[in-house]
Amino acid sequence: MKALAEYLVSAGARVTGSDLSTDSRTATTLRSQGVELYAGHAASHLPPQCRRVVHSAAIPADNPERVAARAANLPLISYPKFIAELSRMRQTIGIAGTHGKSTTTAAIASLLSASGPAPDVLCGAEVIDTGRNGWSGDSRRLVVECCEYRRHFLDVAINTLLLTGIEWDHVDSFASLNDTLDAFVRLLRHIPQQGRVIYNGDCRSSRRAIAAARIEHCCAGPQVVSVGWGPDNDWRITDCTEMGWGSTFDLVGPNDRLGTFVTRLPGRHNVSNLALAAVGAFVLNAPASDILRAVERFSGVWRRLQQLGEWRGMTLIDDYAHHPTAVQAVLNTVHRAYPKRFVRIVFQPHQAQRTIAMSGDFCRALSLADSVTVLPAFAAREVDSQLAETTSRNLVDSLRKLGRPARFIASLDHVLPTLETEGRPGDVVLLAGAGSIERVADEFTFRLCRNHAG
Image (cartoon, rainbow, N blue to C red):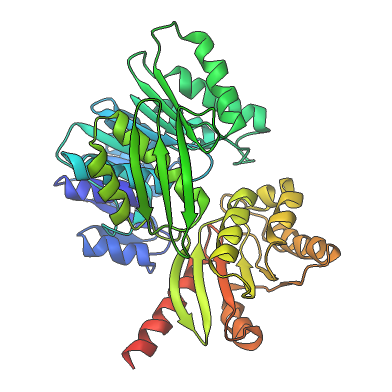
């Protein structure tokens, strides 16, 4: 919703909105751009001049503002449906997949902007280079992050699809990996015959989905291009060298070599994201020289292995990781960037359902840390607060049975005191999770800025 508000404001619209709380960093950012925000939901929040009401898919039908919009016969539409409507008026580049969507979305938007008219952009995370999630460009292209939750991405009219990979996630929406695959196969079958699919060829599930979807296509179907580390990909990542907090790598295609890339983003997973975006931009006719320069300048997105600074001699890093694969990727990256240093992770699970369903994988991933602190699971569409705490305590018990030092703390307010007591100079502290744990990162940032000013 932040991305859409920013896009509409930059396109010249007057935008108002409401949320249960408006004291967040996001709310402050939106206000600075001219968005009028109200705390709580009330019919009076709809301005007299309102032309349209767009609501998050999480807002129920009995919300007072939705009720007021219907009573006033105002056009009322959900965010996914609005994006679908917008996509039908553009040449749409959609980014889908379980991991890396936001980084890949921001990356290809940056690469295309560096080589021609800037596209319209709707990204699920704040792009560090712009300070925004969304903005209006000056071309007929739309770059949009497409989420599989409740199969919302099936509504988007995509001409070029970048597929980052497929795993089971959103356990409240998909019963299994096969159920997830079915949604992605349907998405692939929606790509027009003159369209393009650029996908992560190292992902076995993506290859399965591509194979299943192409059954429906004749020989003149979409152009399909694989990108990855394996030798059987159309575009191969080669000669990768991780250099502390960044990497260099080459991209070699069937008839082209794009050159040697330099990136400030850490981790092999980010190399994969950038390679996918680079090939996507090249397929869309961006010059290789522009792509190389834009990748080197690209700073990534908010809360993706974001270095916050040094606090009491400890290195602080913040990340959105909330799936076992993502937790494993960020911990591996931190260990490679900071060898021989003690790594602490403070993890807030996202939804009890996901944590229970993937508890074994979470234990294996979290075990990569030298010390694990677990918060109650962030509810996100769940209402049983006791289950949130019980699930996290069970995760801690499982980690201890594996011989890992792990502890449960009851709230975000206890994170800083715990680190003040237990942390040691030289430690690396990773904050991980997709919920309210970002408030801890904000508090750290505030303290660091205050200390610096002092």
